[in-house]
Image (cartoon, rainbow, N blue to C red; front, side, top):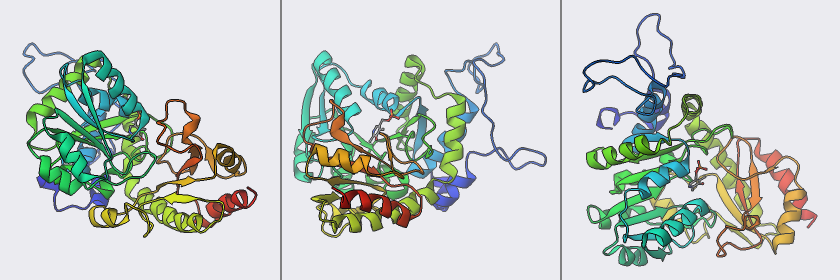
Amino acid sequence: MSSHSDLRPETLAVSLGRPPHTPGAALNVSPVMASTYVGAHDTSGPGLGYGRDGNATWTALEDVLGALEGGRALTFASGMAAASAVLDLLDPGSTVVLPTSCYLGVAALVRSRAERFGWTLRTVDVADTEAVLAAADGADLVWLESPTNPLMEVADLPAIGAALRGRTLTVVDNTFATALLQRPLEHGFDAVVESGTKFVGGHSDLLLGAVTVRPDADDLFRSIADVRHDHGAIPGPMEAWLALRGVRTMPLRVRAAQANAGVLAERLAAHPAVARVRYPGLPDDPGHTRAAATMDGAGSLLSVDLADASAAERFIDGCTLWTHATSLGSVESTFERRRRWSAELDVVPEGLVRLSVGVEHVEDLWRDLEQSLDAL
Ligand SMILES: *Cc1c(COP(=O)(O)O)cnc(C)c1O
């Protein structure tokens, strides 16, 4: 937002979404537990009427998330609720561009809607800019994810955003990078979807999602707000409050986890039991040059390819500090073999383990991984 443009992300994350600085006031907003608000006869005024229309705790969180992405945010009950709200804008018969490999929940949702509503699906390798632009021709929605989950492919968001600006509805799922490492709205994308369950919350204790739209996209903002109101996939006040508490430290957590990930990626790549490390921070990764040019860091997620499913399972079972769990972006390090989910796309290798690096001491994390890899 222009009024905050002189403040850096670390400052925005801490200073926005607060009550006014008046003597005696609390520094933090509280979780506002309200299903309804005292009424006025004239309902055209600014006040809230019902709990599904708005909540001061959401608003505080939306102020922070919007400022970080450079747009206006609407929070939802989960990342999937946020994604659904965007997809809900499409008419039957629409044409949708979707990554060949992306978060499986979104891929499955788009595929099922495509079947029900007669959408034409065009799947593209997000790293192939020419292919993305060709597929976007005549499309009603271009949905991108970068880096992709869990293959870690990197799209050229500045080039794609500039080429498609104003031509079609363009959306980036920014869950992996967060607004701290890339800001798609600045490159011309219309909206960013994020699972706040991950890095925003940061402690594996809540689900939440957000859609953030370009500051000038008033119609889009209103349409998505209407979907939220009508479908009711609103965040609970406690979740919004926890996410607000989480976002205060997101810059610190992302930086610490990313530093750990860089060290672990290099060591994993040198281990004989690891066939391949997928991490755009590594100089020989296919996405490295692009990530270095377009992102403010490679993040804290990486995937390793082991020999097969059995090696991946034995690797996971041999670790004690790392937690075997899905989800990502929390303070504790977690990992999982993605193909254990039957819905995971078959472009993901059977022996691939996705690691979400946390903020523990990197030497403790490495020792746990190394002794298990050594035993394979
Ligand atoms: C987790 C995730 C989602 C879905 O978010 P939920 O909060 O689990 O509904 C969407 N996109 C990506 C990239 C994710 O990792």
